[in-house]
Length: 251
Image 1 (cartoon, rainbow, N blue to C red):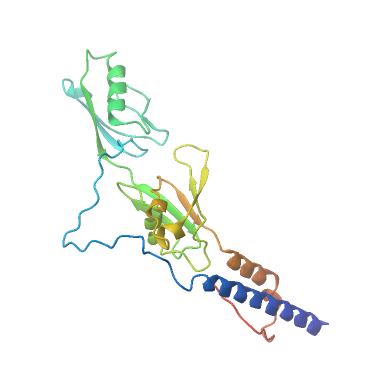
Image 2 (cartoon, helix red, strand yellow):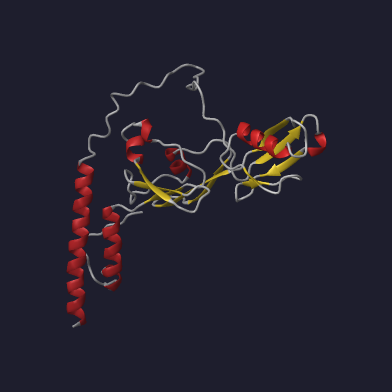
């Protein structure tokens, strides 16, 4: 009876393996000619290439963890250095709490002037960002080195974050990558990103800029999921002495 069961499992395993190999071969046949980049301009060969300039950049908005210098020109005794708390608030000697998260510096100056006007006559207040909070991006799923990646200044783009994570494994999906965005709130929003179009198709518009605390998840491909099910349901029950006609492995 044991021999019959092993024989039956071996036949099923052989069928699954051959099916996986056939699916992989069909996928490869569609990519035999490689991507077509004929519509893209050649890279400039100047000795000192210039970065593309922007007519205007978005006004910086204060983030959690930023350190702010609050200065009063005529009342230096009120000068303080404060840190934006996890709840988006700052506290000073006069103000127990004021919400500043995602506000611009002019907006913060106006709010401080209004609050300090109760104690000072026409206060002249100026806020400067002393240090910027580090931006954290998380990459998980079918990448070679998943983990947390920290930058200071501008957030990473999709391709930059995946490059930090060592690239996508052969078992990963490239055209339907999930980006989970939570921000400072507690209600997450999930988006779909097309890494394949940004890289293999040369569509730079798909290389979106990420937001602080974004989580990038690279799902398994259908072939990889089928192989995982095969391992769970068949391969673990086949003895090492059984012979299977084909093998398939995804790293």
